[in-house]
Length: 195
Image (cartoon, rainbow, N blue to C red; front, top):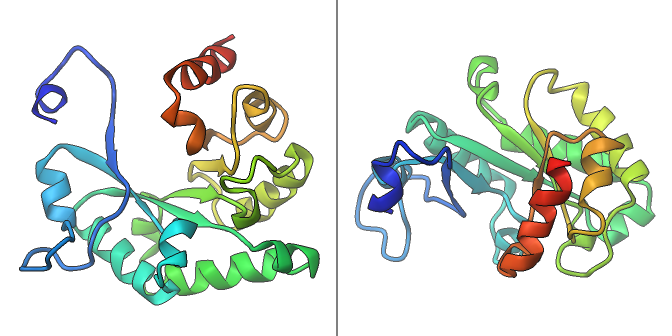
């Protein structure tokens, strides 16, 4: 981290995959948002479905969002529905509920610093991404609440399907999971989006 922390050469912005909701203290295995800020992080991923699978609730996510904002970090707030919820036509209701609980008692001014990431749970790590036209419907729904916030798509993104999420569905970025573990695949995604 120190290599990047003081470098003026790269325009890389650092982020973390999670943080705790307390500013400081003895919380073994956790990292506070203040520590992340001290390390040079500007972003922190919160509410990812893999964390929810470990028992993280919307109320815990709310605490983490507040703590991250208090430390002047930009949270990347993940939202998404399960396959069952999608099949039952509940996407908008589920997302609205996650937004209401996650953003509870967070001011409009603070909300402007949050990046939204739509990640359909059923698409993560499955190799079965949401079709860009379906993802665009969700993006349009989210735009009703977030006129200016960055909104990203995540869920089985790879070099073959990344471009339509940006160029057709009009997401402003991607939350790349498994494909980022393979350097060649990740570079392909970046190159495809650069042309």
